[in-house]
Length: 428
Ligand SMILES: Cc1ncc(COP(=O)(O)O)c(C=O)c1O
Image (cartoon, rainbow, N blue to C red; front, top):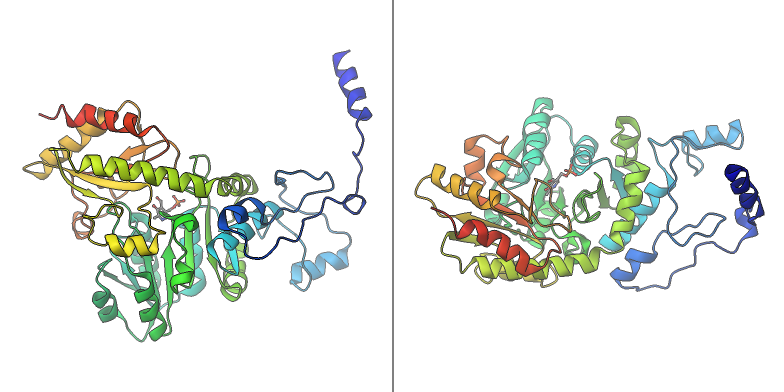
């Protein structure tokens, strides 16, 4: 009886068969020069015939074609139109258009994860005999993907200091195709000079790729400083709430569409529509989250610097950070949400035990290896995110056993300090 009533009520609602042409719910043409916070809310809204104000989620693996001729043209790429979910999807397109608008690039392409985006970039731009110059402080999986996996296919990589531009210059070869940096780095927050590296890359006909995961376009726009391609792990601040895996590359259409489009279509590191929708909605609050989390991070970093058990704090927002001035210029005057700190200890084993004690004493912070969440996350990079690097690689990257990384979230700053104090005050 109840089910029958529900069906009748449904029938009573108007509009179930509206066609798009019968509504005025199409996208408005946005004015020029909107601020980034507004772009984050307004770009790439293409309501269906029902005129929804929140972006639609198109969960479908395939798309109906009006006739065989149209299908043939779309599959041949001579006519625009969605065909198959591995190639593209309207929800993914909305995310790509909005992220590109926020980064200030012509185009963007989604990927299943941040590493999927880096894989797509390497597959699209590198071949045997090519050379890459890469910061040795990059995320561990990036180092392994480029150095080890692509090394198997004859791509050579020189790993250089994140901060010493002269080392980057000395590493250049006639075969250099890419310079690849992440700024600030994970976990030591070292900052590289994007404009200087762009000048070096362009001088030898190479591209500068910047992983903008730690700052996001809310704080840093590498293309404005000369970078050619921007990598994102959407898993981090773009989503910002620890819900889904996602990745993206932003850049000029001739590379994004012509080079990476065919790679994603054939290799299949496609961004899932549901994940694209979650990250698209995450972009709406990106600006305000990055400001608030960075303010919390600065307060925690300043406080940690006063703690007797702490040997050193790594945070670009601190005046003590070696690239503080550069970071303030590149990052909209903000240090970002991630910091690391080193516990004192006479030996590596003691320092590691101290780091584990501080981590294990927390009752609020999440012990996890992700970052980019509204929840503050604490981890020991030496045995987690960078645990698969060899001891030599790890030490070259400056990651000691006493190092703890804190990705500061929206927890109240006094609660974060109290949580860290629990371990810091009880070290033996
Ligand atoms: C700087 C940086 N780039 C890329 C990645 C890879 O992203 P994903 O985990 O989405 O593959 C990570 C992951 O932690 C990262 O920290």
